[in-house]
Image (cartoon, rainbow, N blue to C red; front, side, top):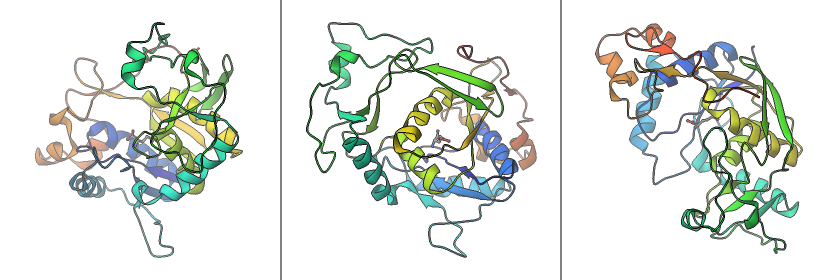
Length: 288
Ligand code: GLU
């Protein structure tokens, strides 16, 4: 508790009650030391209108953030779209260490591969090891090719989540080599989030439990970059009356719709909204 925390929305739609629930917990646990980071790297999917709406919704929920990129008095937010130099530095380091490799295969190549990719317990296609190159030259810039992190096959990555306890994932089985740099020359989510959480000195990352496997991937990046990782608190997911998790398309459950209906901000934060419940047994797979 009481560590520096962050809210990290991606402005691809209106925030829904699931975000309100997670962000409310993040704000409480951070006890005032909170950063707002808008994850707007992908300009084709993100929209400034959603950024404005997100900030307005967060304020309506009663959340405030304390720090921005321009020093004292600036309350932010930070925008990932303005931080590519940080990501590039990390890319260079990983590339020089040969922790990452260029991986030109397209999704279509993978679909039509002669060998069927292994599918993890969570239903994720694990990138086939056959596509790892033996030799490659490290360029100065990523170029127009995706780069993947080479995972240590068979290694168990474990961490103690502050909400769920011990979590374990096996590299190469539960997830494969993952993209850190995209074909469109942008840092991928896993790399950008690690670089930012490190540079912003985040003490505890609060986010939905759907990202538990991502956390295992990110721990490999912290290790490769020689950085101490933050603590993690994953939140339960908010489910609709059919037990399905809410998505950005769950229009009826956006914060602004609930606000229009006159639901109070605390109720939205606590998720005391008719037809919704907090998922307790919704894990797509048990933690091994
Ligand atoms: N922008 C990410 C999302 O909205 C944040 C994930 C995280 O908290 O690391 O899913």
